[in-house]
Image (cartoon, rainbow, N blue to C red; front, side, top):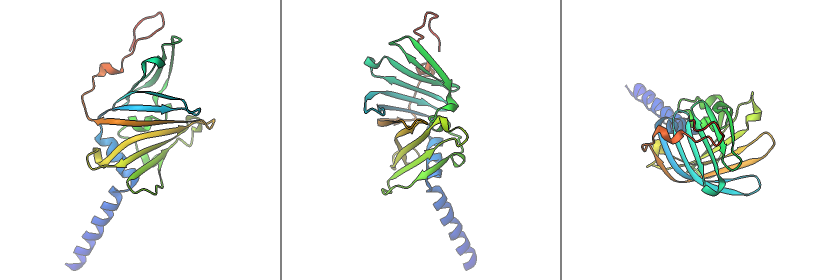
Length: 200
């Protein structure tokens, strides 16, 4: 009886340890978040900043609506990311899987295949780093969370930084995060500035 109790306690301890590991915690967070709204501040390698509103609807949908003066919009529809530059009436598209952001947009992603935890001196901070070793040109993304009991799976997504293959780093910091709020699919449509008219 004592032996069985000891085994049960040992198993429980292992389960608790596994659940609290960074990758497990982040996976639980991604699985618990269906939608998210937040304000963002993006800083590029030259220190220039832009602000805007971020919408995420998993799986795959994302919208970066930049400040009006930027005349820039980035939308993901689950298959591709589209950047619309209204200032020059230019549209660029690339597969969503080619973007480091795909880590955040797929709630079923197996993080153990391409991500690793980054040591932090602050126990309330969780940072993971993700990259595709077979495709280094896609860059490396470092995603930061803080532990908060009122956030999904106990983690609050605070932002991320992306280091591209040329060594250029851009950083996104989030504020006013809201999780699992209603977001219409219409939010991920966009107006094409080119002569062919609206598309989404």
